[in-house]
Image 1 (tube, rainbow, N blue to C red):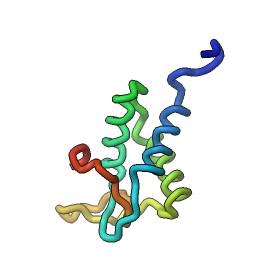
Image 2: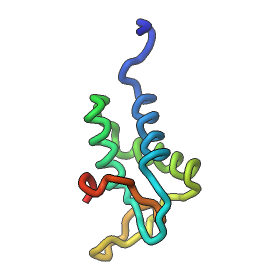
Image 3: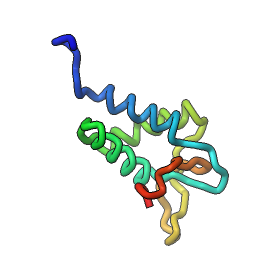
Image 4: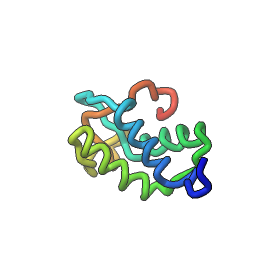
Length: 103
């Protein structure tokens, strides 16, 4: 590695989010993915790769742009959970193979 290359910079976290959006999200009518679920899963992936954590607010801003660009979906603030509480989520998309991680 070059002595001028950042090894653990924020661009690695953004690259991981892009991989998450491109390969681990699929459109699925009737499903939704909350910011909390996505962040929890992202943190676990980052920990496995020893990238450290990213502030949730930074994650949300970057993820919001990526999901809009790659899947054409905006973040909604009116998605109700099982208890009827409104939360921020992407409607019509779900994580693939993450059921055990983000229950």
